Length: 209
Image: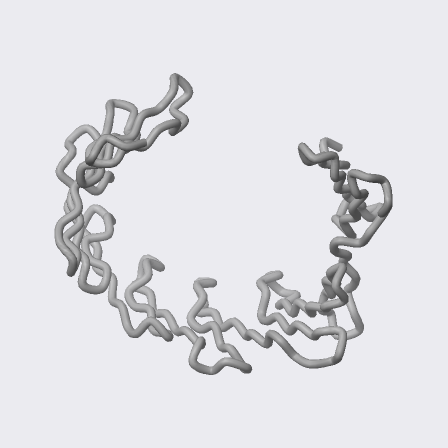
């Protein structure tokens, strides 16, 4: 079924993936490289529970209950309990009719609560949280034109969706691209890629790699 069954790290540590008869991942166990620990539970999944939630239990005994809307299977919240019974995480998600997240409410650390608004094309228009309030603006073509106090320009006719200039509060940042669209320069830094388009070197303005 082309599912990963195990993964071996360079040091010999092995992870084993366990699945249910229906093909869902139910757990991951670990075999230590020295053979002293076999089948140690890294994480296991259980459910659905009586209230329809799923439970994820990690090897240290922490349990996270995952709540979701059965109609659309979107997660509606997470609650994590430590082995001593204390609540470490209690998060609730809110959505609009289009399925965009409008609120992430933290019931433990209220200052971490976030809220979001969107335009009629489901593009993010504003975000508020511990970081303050940020607004977003877009070009007629749909490119991001402004994020908070940072504005963006798109001046590469060969790559019309690539940012060539970002005006930030600390100064401008310039970007350059090669024919394949890979970023090759950024405010004096230069990047090099292999024949597969994979980044293998970044050189600072003073010539250091």
